Image (cartoon, rainbow, N blue to C red; front, side):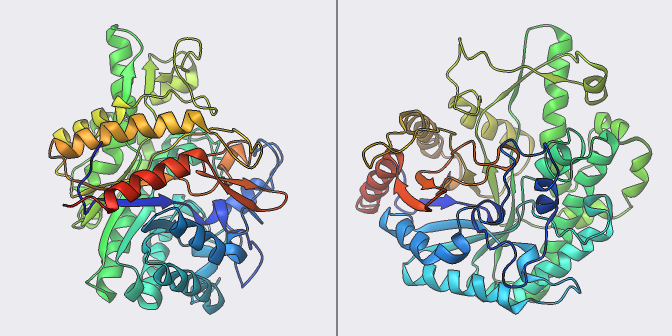
Length: 445
């Protein structure tokens, strides 16, 4: 596989998943701190208070990143670390990110920041069900633009708003743990309103930053050729894709989604779509697997219009988290999106696999992850060669970390973390990526 000389190679992390330092430097609680404190919410009853201790070990982690050949780093800024309860700058938290950016600069690594990767401040009453939260996000975006914007060439407003809206407010397995279909659609709307207001607020402070958003689009195939299964698969894609991409381009939601929001529709105001549809410099796409849907099999599923079918591990290759390994889906989903929306330049901002292989004799031979990366990057190379405007790839993740509701039971890192000692061990997959990046760094354009 070959890529253009200018193609960006990076790794990705998120603040709550790696930083720790949960009660240091004036950091406030987030809804994920609250969620972790509720019995039964996290598989191993863990939390993010220490995580990978990146808050203290960032110089070591940046040096490791550089030694592996990564020249681009996607990370998130913790809203709860840089803004105090009165909405003003918390300089101690901002200083942490300044030190991190200093380390990245010293090692020749370009930062790619995300403003919101799910760790919403706990004190924002009503969370994403409160329209005011979108305005507080805009205030936060403006603050980061003023304090750090001169050092952030590319910034995404939100990471995977579908997860915050639907896993958090419909299925209830993510913070804040609500199960209310209409509420989830209102949260989705407020998230996209926050995106638009955030872009406006940032650009009012700085006009030289490349701004975008990171989505996790759905590729959903029907379980069978039955019309009811095809309709279910379409509803799943409307929820995951159209609810977020339509507003980015000033388009109304599909009628099916408007019907599902019910009385909560009054929370969507005239003029909101125009705010959502700010010009984008880029879009980040995260891809892990596909979904398969069938007609609803329960009353709860009937409300959303589909039931997902779990992949058969006896028939399909799966990662350790139970997700199907489906490399061609990366190409299919991108091509589907390009048929529907005029996307700006694309970055693949997350792609990776849960492979829980441990360290043996000082090495970690994560062969499932290695094969996953090889097959997906082969698809990516073909897409770039075909002329699709994809400009970079960020592997998820640099480090094993807190995997949300799964706690520390699933490992997505290309670097193994021993949580007892915080020792970092590059895995076989990291060494393979290192060789791939080195080969492209020395290949003439």
